[in-house]
Structures are given as structure tokens and as C-alpha cells.
Length: 85
View 1: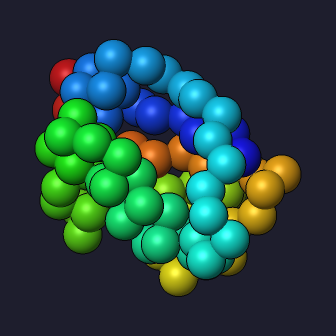
View 2: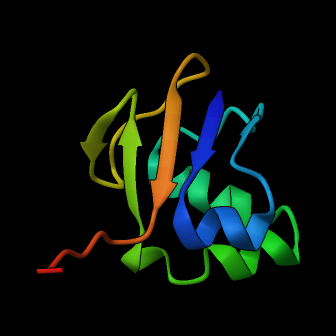
């Protein structure tokens, strides 16, 4: 499973992507985020406000109950805001 991190998550973790093999019980984006938090204090801090996170699976925005699999690319990023320059 390929993970891609953006913005504040990337800065907090110090990496922009990684390949992981989560346990078999990680079947949704929500479960993936919870598992990532258990990987250590950097992950716990970077992903602590998971209700504010957004996710994409294979480059499509999804909800946290969306299924994930070993061959998926999952992107995690904070909410995107816009405005006039």
C-alpha cells in the first residue's frame, strides 16, 4: 500500500510518501489512520485531528469508511481552503 502525505502532514512526518503493509484488519481509511497513529509519536501528532483530515484512494476523494487494499494509493491531507489572492 502506497501512502502519500501532503501539506502539514508531510511536514510533521518528514516524508512525502511511503509504502506500508498494515495488518489484515485495516480495511478502511479510518482503520488505516488509526493504525498509523499507533506507529509512534510523530504519526500520532501528525494525524491527531483525524476528523479534519481528507483522503483520496487511487486519486479519488473518499470518505473515511471507504475500503482500502494492498494495491491502493492512499493520500492523506488537511482540508483545502481557497480564497482570493
